[in-house]
Image (tube, rainbow, N blue to C red; front, side):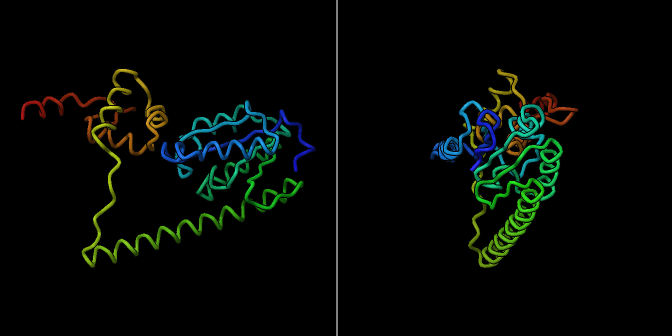
Length: 222
């Protein structure tokens, strides 16, 4: 399929949303698909995180786009939502790749050797994917509203457990990791880690999150 592109110029980006998906071999399946397309193992990049996050909050992907990919390289993803679930973010990504003359291909979409046609196909389908995602969210909201009205809605189960709180505290205070690094280690989203630090561990925004010592003193005095 990509015989005209040297193997050392082919790159693959694999992503999963959580550690649970990683455990059920989702990453391995993506890697295997890249290898079948002639992507060298050393050129496969992967990370744990949400495709809804902007590019700057996915450091592996951002480094790949900004620093590693060169003119005439090929970037593969197994599905278009591996790189973005937001049309605006996807358009920004497309423009970056197009300006660098990097061919982008999602293996679940039609493919053309013409970069301009490729860009048109993936952009239109990304917009459709975003539309479908918003429709799904709307159906979920309607379902939740109906369940609440019927008194059957128990609420979403929280992922913030004592184990996670203790792990975040250790990674922040003993290992001095950033929110992005903690999210990668724990397999949780940046928003979840931020919430743990702010609401459970008394950190407050001050250019960056810092410990709210005054609040801790109040809690100890209770």
